[in-house]
Length: 356
Ligand code: PLP
Ligand code: COI
Image 1 (spheres, rainbow, N blue to C red):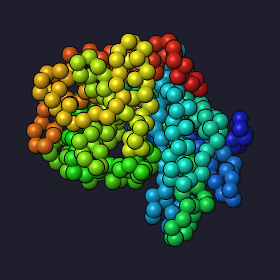
Image 2 (cartoon, protein in one colour):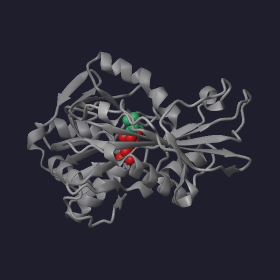
Image 3 (cartoon, rainbow, N blue to C red):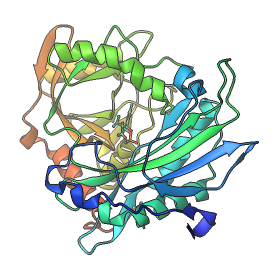
């Protein structure tokens, strides 16, 4: 066993699975690296941080996360540059958001410096796993579950914090067809929509399945009260370009995940001199813009999804076809820029990248 920085205890695997992975055919999220980070919270404090061989978790059948969903996660990515360096994209933002989710779900927070060190140490140990083919990256999945073995309802006294790594290919292989949802609700004001809480995703599955049966890939959620305002999609924030103005729902209500990809796109667009409006966005203005030909671009922004062009929007029984993807000036440009930025091809002018 080695002791790393921040006293992380490292136990290396004796059986690397690396040689069995087909890096030319990487799916999203099904292949995992040789190691994982694991740290338990008990008696009011975090116990020894460890990196151990990747393997199953042993859980008591009454583990509270399994019953009541006190569980949160994050998703971020690292890339390998042409000269073999590994760069993580804005991990400080994910760490902060993780702890905001923890607070909302009444869970223990993870010290930021230890979290960052855990990411770096784990990725460094599994650095051979970071893929380098076009469009591939290392998807990093930190998560935390409540681990009291207790069937009563109360905030857990015990937590398990884990980070796993997955070399991935594209999440969406093609432009997405979305449906604007006007019956089911993802998040209401005062709820947990802003948190990356496991249950938010469970609750989205049934409405998404209904939309999939109609031929859509993903839902665009609207506000719970009126269903007149666009919020976000299932795994990404949404952005539109109408009359050369970039428009995206603002984050003042606590119903929308504060996306790091979207924040980055907004910062880049402003830097490029675009007008960006973060404000309530109505379904009506988007449909009107499609109808009168002023909608130039529509896309999702998310870690897994990257910049995902929206090809069609379904609303109240009509499917609207959006402008051809190849003609979309903004999303194509920002997609290339973000992808080159993550690969270290573009200079890190915003100071976002963290080297492993
Ligand atoms: N909205 C939801 C519900 C998500 O799950 C995600 C993905 O993390 C996003 C938006 C995009 O956020 P980010 O860009 O930080 O990945
Ligand atoms: C993301 O990390 O981008 C996510 O939204 C997680 C997704 C795979 C469900």
